[in-house]
Length: 452
Image (tube, rainbow, N blue to C red):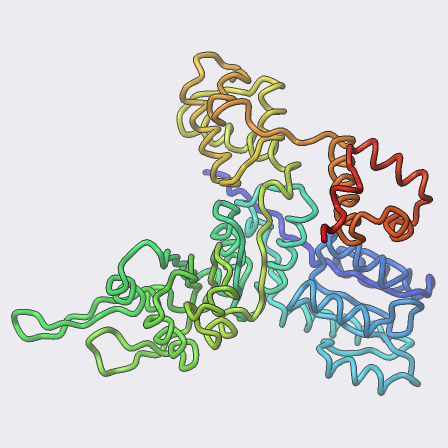
């Protein structure tokens, strides 16, 4: 008999916030006794810091706290993590404030002293409504990262996954927008239904319309034959519209109608067909700029952009490059049987190079290096060839600081028209030190004086 691999269930993560250490400890004990994973902090600022690292499924916070109170924390969490449920704890005298908090989006409130069963009932209800799943975190398994900026995007994705809100994912080409869309689908209640993706820039307007909405046409026998579109193929699941910024205006009108009516009308048909599909769209283009130029409908933009997640360029999470390289090498070893590693200098070059094509470009370079390397260890010279020369280089701290200082001094001299005394005052430096800075960075005040 084959053994069945049991995937461990994930505990729900609850962030508890209260400036009363005794109550904080009591709530933590109660929740951990129910097999929840709990992070306990004593302030709103600590809660925001913990949220990006801990990625909670629910937040339980006191209303009255110094500096940032429960209302302020609620607002900030709503901005950063749409869909994250927040339960407010309040004393009897502040119940009106707690009611106001629920009107602002809090899931609910509990009065102190907190009844144990009431707490557990509220927590279970909040987790159920948020779409929390106890499944192992395979929803994000395709996204390889250990960076804080990517973890923040994944936390945002996981929060919105429990809702049916439409998501707009933006970012440069090759940053993993489709992978994030798939992750949202896998973490959602729709995960057992289809995920379907289409690139709106990859086909003609007529073909794109037919692919999205389907079409009807008569056969030789006179019968009507229907071609199912992707909205029908994704029924109950998720449809990703990639490169939505390239969708022709005529189709934007039709898509808007579908989103308003939750029904499609196949090409050549007079009948509407109800559809139940979550739409996630993505683009590398600036939709605001396209709207200003009349190339993208404003009403469609607001229909699609309920929650916005911006995928960072690879340059903004370089710490992931060695991790991604190792992942790609292991993937290729499974596919081809070629087991290779990079020389240390080659890894350093990969980690500091410019990546205009982002993760997709990095993957292509690794594939090329594995195919062309004649030894088990991929040399730095082969990486240099793949990058078209010596590759990019991350500036040293001193170089980056000098570049910033030179730029700052140039800007302040431009503002003051080369007046050193005024520039020194703006920079909050004495005149002598300011002159020394200018000399060190080879800047001459006369070059910035306005000519009459």
